[in-house]
Length: 149
Image 1 (tube, rainbow, N blue to C red):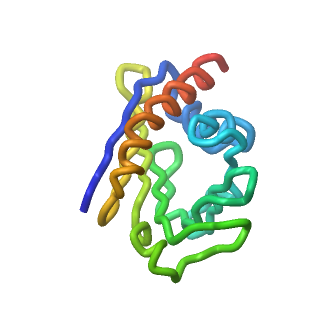
Image 2: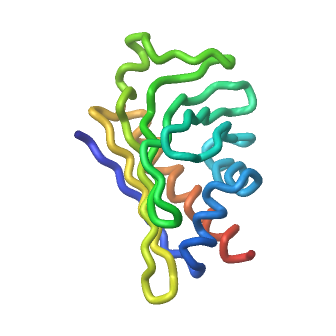
């Protein structure tokens, strides 16, 4: 199992950070670091399907594996979406099948520490390089949005 971990400390309560992470408007705002126009189609409830999409309807299909508000959210990635069509069967998507993206929020001296773990059987080098550059940018944006509210 391969794991990448990213974290930030935000001067706000866990609930405030949670609300920005999963709010309809704010989710798109902080995930723009990955792709302008990123959005999610879901109700964020445990067991629910999640479509993480760009404006061209490309992205990932996942499920909410666990939700403990405002402490922890875990997604299990099932496959890809291309032009709005879900693919959970092809060999190309099997590398991501079963990968988890976990968000852990802890209270540290009145602030919130957010840790994001990406766990997979294997993360291709091009994605690792992209995540190492982009996740810190996204977390900085999340911090900025949360602290200005």
